[in-house]
Length: 420
Image 1 (tube, one colour):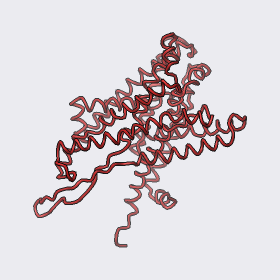
Image 2 (cartoon, helix red, strand yellow):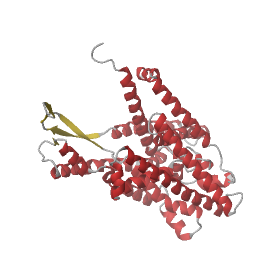
Image 3 (cartoon, rainbow, N blue to C red):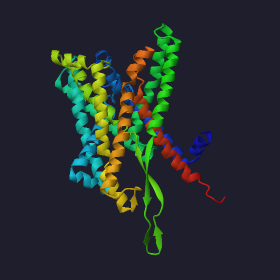
């Protein structure tokens, strides 16, 4: 490991990329402490102090939501716009053509995603600002103040989108994912401080704190194992002669991820369940409040619905992100086939059957990860610390992807070859 880090440091280009990424992290963290003008921080704290689902959003923003700072909405509008574009790509022919047009098509999709981010961001920001006006959280309750707060929040999200794209272009790793990663990691020290205060006042004992740490370490090991887990389907390529050369005749495999959908089903399910809770926070209505209390975080109704939604969205997102028919057609065009199966439709049916089975395992894993904070809080009595599988899943996934990119860059510059 030390040799690997030394190799990373010795590559000048890679070192500059890492330093640029760290500089962008500093910019992101500074923006999390710049408050939005005209907002009463005391009212904000009372509105967002309850509910683990709000803790999830605050974790993604690195604590910017609870402070209602410039980056209070974090990169969420961009993620929503990207998800919408990905869904539209599967059903709108023109977007599907763009996705297959290479770099030019990707630029068009990226441009539309940016415009959609601005639109979704302003709608979300205006809703948040108007809700604050309804709860007397604005120092000036005029409609002009609502528009000013909405514009500031939208500008913060757009700037954060630009930071993420700069990291992707000049840093290392995926910039949007790394911003979420930085926001989650930034919340860990405050969580550890909370546990220390619990120990100090006697809310929990040393055994409960150690048990919490052991469960966290075991969770990291489990997440790494599942994230790296694959079902490898063997593929045989037929021999073919092109000119005077012979191609094919080798054996490869088709890697199918156990967790193909990653953390997206949890985000989808959380967004749906968060809607009535959010309305109850800002709209004083007896029916909405009763519905929000019925499906409050931690109740068995909420847990059952949460698990069902996660399983549903896991299959849904996997079907959207992985086109099995295209995989089978590309395999057929390249002269590949699965031993014992004919190319084409039989191959697609086999891959679909295998993918359905391993997706069930991935869906159960995601559901377990999502509801784990409830059980961890109940067993260890550690409340108020959002340390669950969702955060670990994002952190581990982003860290593994970034390290793989760094190692591949370092390998191309330290490869000695077969002859020294």
